[in-house]
Image 1 (cartoon, rainbow, N blue to C red):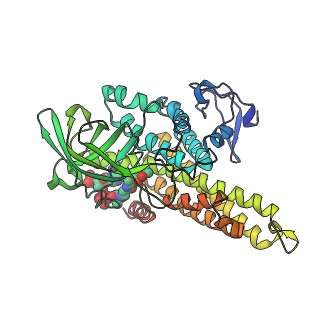
Image 2: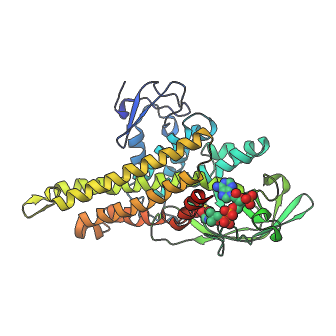
Image 3: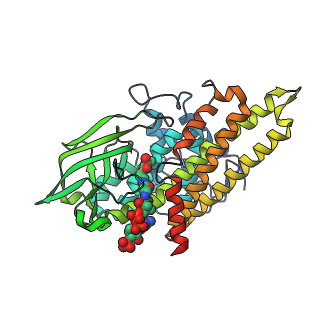
Length: 409
Ligand code: CAA
């Protein structure tokens, strides 16, 4: 049975949409199989709503322009976080595929909300789900997967960006506590997060095998957030530097064993990169759709510019790249669903999707001509938002390293 998405009942907390129905998302059909999860929705229990409309609703008209400090309405963010609950708590066969599709749709409306969700879901909740004890999951996962609290991921340091092994934040064991000192920067969600998955050095002499992970309450004395970063794009996604000054963390907050931190970080990023690939596709789709619609309206030489072959070819290339990126991303998500290692596939998806999104956003500005350079239209925001997808969660150069290392093993 096929039904337009707006006719489908989508019920919060119940992922069992009509079995056998097909949801059409960005022209991609997703068939709902009985018992499998699908996309979930419903702000505060609303019974019937459209995923697409919800996502567009999340993207308040001002979404791309606001800065976090004071003016941003946090309600859309909270609603967005509700999205992840079934994906995180119900381990079902297509959770990551559904999740990638949801991140794409959300990012199509607002890339900032997309990354807020992706970091909380992929980089904070996922390592707790995978490496946390039952007690840790109860306290540090459930409220974060339910959208009541927000998490962040503390890996990057001033000297440890691409070279993540260069951790200098130290955790020194004192009885049943560790004392943490150091600095993390570019921490997405950092200014507003309730907890952080934190990576530290517990033994500097052991290299990557001296790195240990913790989960930390951001209200702990010695957890010192600095002012929000000012950025080129994703302006409604807050990030900041964080200093740790003699911060005491109970041993019970350690995630995994001492020395397991680097593998936890790397395997977590394998999942995170799927989220960023999906975010990039969402941004690219928004830019493409605006360019296509504008091309039908704008006239030059007495005809809509869509009738000029130069524009037609640009549009054809844009959508082809986006659909190729989506297939790579869904393949990586599907491998993650199967439990197989997906480092290479996630890196391919993130590399291709982020670079494609930038090419698409660039062409979208070009198709808009002077209007593409104006802050009056959203296409300028997509152009700025796309840029970060080639940088965070591993630059394009790092993705090429991961892919070539896997090839040459
Ligand atoms: N899964 C499990 N284990 C892994 C792994 C993975 N994906 N990748 C590596 N490892 C293991 C290796 O097997 C190796 O283990 P052994 O010593 O037992 O053999 C160990 O980790 C060390 O591996 P490498 O020698 O390959 O490590 P490296 O120091 O050469 O680094 C790297 C590899 C790929 C360059 C890595 O440093 C990297 O990914 N850098 C980019 C960091 C990054 O993406 N940061 C993003 C920050 S978060 C963010 O951006 C969030 C945001 O704002 C939205």
